Image 1 (cartoon, rainbow, N blue to C red):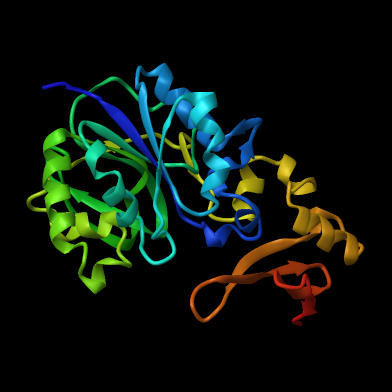
Image 2: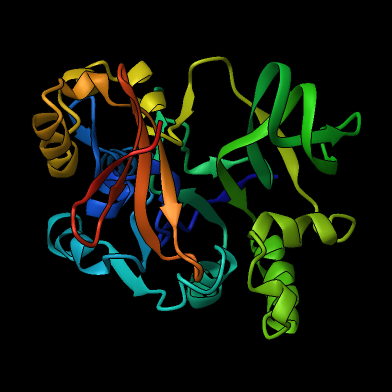
Length: 291
């Protein structure tokens, strides 16, 4: 049976705090990679596949996405709970659009367009990881149906990239989400975690992709390995200022990691230079030598 894709939901509400400080300055999905804005590239690929209705769920710095309504004709939905909920909140506010739908993340980069108008089955995109990994690893039966998902493993197919939901899957998942949404323990769950807890009733298959087809950048260092132009030019006013004040080049600033406050709000980031490790504080721009 073939399913006609009705639309795509692009989740773009999160803060992507691990990508500090670039994600502190603007949403990660709006970063330019190899000459294209990440979310604009994804919109283009969806439209090339015949997916006309594209819904973007925005939260953090949501106004930065508003230009896409006029430029790309997308539907924008606000997720005002992006600070207090995981991505299940984005699917909750977009629940009326869930049909035969692609569910995407705004910060993925696809070398080859993975989208198609006619889809064989409900699936989650997957790539094979050699050696140990902390990604979400999948077990499948002989037909390719996902039977188990575990966090961390070795030599495994892992969840990475987009997923396609059939209308039946969307209906069942929405029912579960509505039933569990107000439970305190649901707030911090990825939608994938909710799926894992109901895997027997939510039928989904694996769709395998080859090496170097789907990319996700969790840090500036990972992005630099993919787009070398970020080595000399981070596109970050903060990092440019830091490099100038320390009399360094931007490429000398590495191993960046977020620094959060007691309530999870971003306070700054740590970074390494040839001279040692430092801390940068957003509030006053202070640079502190750590060791």
